[in-house]
Amino acid sequence: MELQQILVIIDPTSGDSQPSLQRAHWVAKHCNATVELLLCEYNSTLDNRYFLDRDAQHKTRDALLNNHQQWLESLAQPLRDSGITVTTEVRWGKPLYSMILQRIDESKPDLVMRDAHTHGLLQRLFFNNTCWQLIRQCPVPLWLVRDNAQWRGQRICAAVDPVHSADSTATLDHLLVKTTAYLADMFSMQADYIHSYAPLPRTMIFDSELVAAYDDYIERSAKQHSEAFAKLMVNYPVEKANRHLLEGFPEESIPGFVDEHQVDLLVIGAISRGNLENALIGNTAERVLEAAQTDLLVIKPESYQPTP
Image 1 (cartoon, rainbow, N blue to C red):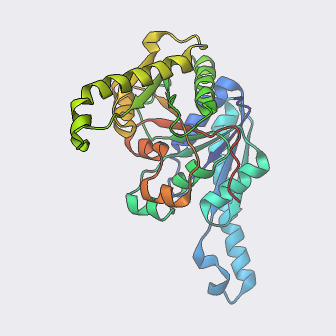
Image 2 (spheres, rainbow, N blue to C red):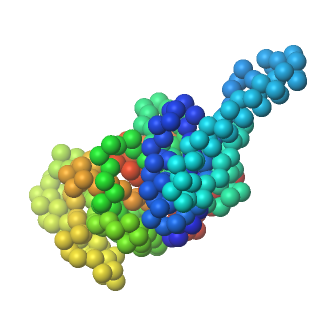
Image 3 (cartoon, rainbow, N blue to C red):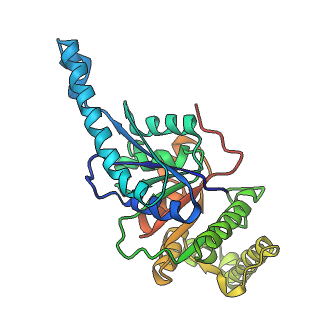
């Protein structure tokens, strides 16, 4: 992973409070990257059907976009004053995630940064939230920024799945480890690596023979995950004190670890799945996003191709 170009998605409804822009400033200063600020606008009242006068429609829309452009320039100035090269881009269209993906395809950034907004199950179910769409479809690393005044930039953590329930070749796990090590070195952060597993609860086992062997099952499960975790990390110079095997559901144990150890950036992988499965249960990255009160860096496999 190299960080030479960062695309920052600006939310026009949030005013001058743009946590992702603040974080991009911090990142760009560390890695000498260029930054592009992207603002996408669409207002249905400026659609053709509301205007009989086409000239008036175009003038009103152009005035709105010009106003946004001037605002972006004002947001960019503090970064430019600190020596960062910043460009700005304003676009008209919807849906927002589609406009963002279009710009990503054009400019090929190394990293996309956007404020994280947590929404309810109903919105996830109908795919009408930009964060969920970007988690699924953004082809480059996606840094979702929490509005967190306590963010220190001191500790980074990667959540891996060495048993490969979702990645049979383990390539994504290795990418997560390498990316985390790279960022930890660049940003002078402490790096931790965690794997969370959840054995089947005793209350869900009804076969008498399996109940009798439950303790043995728990022991074998712990050994399997411990050995797989150790095998994944064997070629990386990571101290055992920075490797953490957690027992529990990822959406509970990982946020708990993040909170307890004051993790500033959680690195997690996302495997693209079928729309129906995502609609019903979401994937681990989405569930952790809702629960973990920290910045989240979502990484796709290098072989990932966006769905047309």
